[in-house]
Length: 334
Image (cartoon, rainbow, N blue to C red; front, side, top):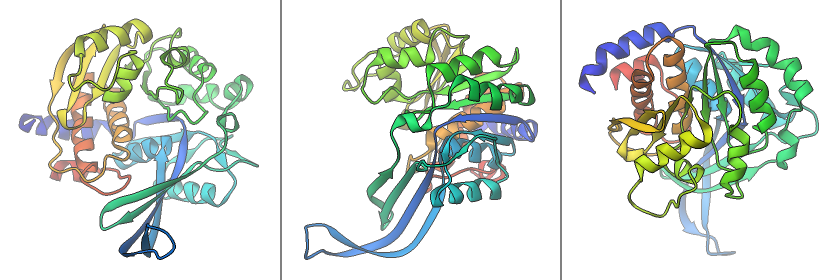
């Protein structure tokens, strides 16, 4: 990875200003920071003395935030509420220079919110607030009204699926069938909560293929219909099965401390070791990977070089506590 420094400089120059449309489940990430020095007399739980509270973008919104932080131009298409959490999310995105597409803000629904309680750099618990999945869906007419006419204005399309309801087979079909020829399209997949691989297959398959899919280790196993309990990762079988089911032109599997696997056509052709020096929090690391990879690929770099770029960006953000982003200077210093 040492010899990648000059390529990193080049990528950072060429990704500047690249326009990426991010579609998927946006959420607000709240962090309550404090200390716990005693146990409650009411129940066997710690009493947290709150020191401060912060909030940032999560899910697909964090992908957009990472793109903007790295020098790209990001626009988010999602669905969230006209509530306090939604206003906070819009404020975070606006300050970061991320555009919000028309049709995102809806009356009468909750903005998906994850609140993490952090004590002494350790996450104590997480509180989730959200509606039923159907509340975040778009119908075909809405997609053709708000998204399809805009696709021609972007260099890349990223679909960030957190299985919260927005990403459906209908949405994937409309996006891929209307994406301009040659556009780089990326998918960060999420197996459905019911654990049925066939359900996930129905969401992502049978359409023009994505340029790349970027599942993590557990997601890749589940999407391939394999058990995630085994210590050994059956690389050849996973790549062959995922190509057979989804036919994406490239596959990048993030393996945590083991780095990344890169391949195409059902075959793994390269392994990249991790560059993370220390890991405090992996929250949002997948968002950073698909953001950086898509930016570099949209600028004309190979998937291999784009993945190495993403590996450096992810190595930086996992060294921070909480959902984080990376800037060009962060990567060069890192």
